[in-house]
Length: 275
Image (cartoon, rainbow, N blue to C red; front, side, top):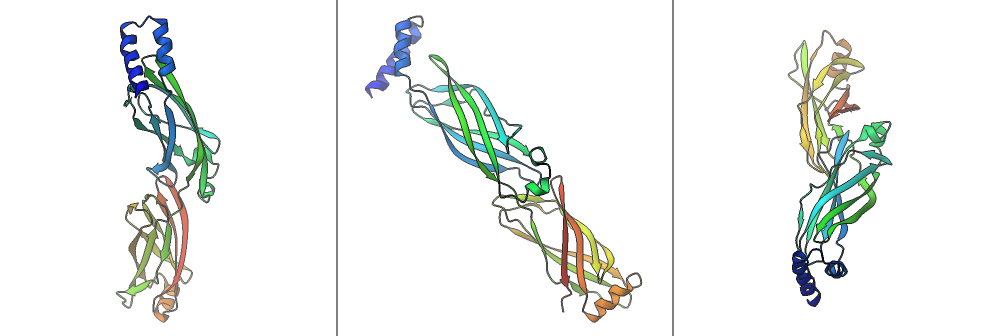
C-alpha cells in the first residue's frame, strides 16, 4: 500500500513538474513493467483451405495508474512461413492494478504454408511462432513489452462421409428410384462448412446418373448430418444395372467430390443394395 500511495503521489507531482529529472528518476524506480501472459490458441472461420488462428494473451498491469496501448508490432509464422496477421487496435486501456485480454488474429491460407493442401490436412497439428512487442503509454513515456510464443494448433480434418445401404423405390417395368442415404460427420473440435456433395452413381459397373446434395452449411463440432440423395434409373439406358437391381445383388457406388470453402476432395463409396 505504501508503494502504491508513493507512486500515485509521484505521478501527481510529476505531472506538475514534468521537467524535474529527480522526480522522473523516482517515478521510474517505482514503476513496474507490465507482463504479458499467454492464454490460449483457438481457430475460427475454419474451412478446409484456410482458418483464422487467434492467440489470446493477458496483459497485466501491476501499477496504480492506467496504461494505454500505443503501438503493436506483430509477426506470425506457420511451419516457418510468415502469414498475414492482425493485431489489437491502438488505444486499448489497461486499468490500474488490473489486466486486459489481447487477441491477435492471423488468417492462414494452407496453400501458402504447404505445397499440397491435401497432404497438409493429413497432419494432426501445425507449428506456429509469434513474435513482436507492445508499446504502452505511461507517464514516463512509452514502454515496450516483448511478445514471443511458440506452439501448435490443430489442423482441420476432412469431413467423414458414409453410405448406408441404398434402397429401391417406385419400381416400374421401365424405371426405378434409387435412394442413397449418406451421413456426413465433422470429426473436428470446431465447426466446418460442407458446401455440397456431387458426383456419379454407378450400379454393377455402369453409370446410371448423377446426384447433388444441398449446401450443408456449418456442421457443429463432432456433429453429423444425414441426407438422402435420390437418382432415377432408366432401365432401357442401363440394362446391366437393371438386371442387377432386379436380382437384388447390385453393388452401388458413388464417385463424387465434397466441397468445403474453395477446396474439393474426391470421394468413393460403395455399398450393397438393401434387401
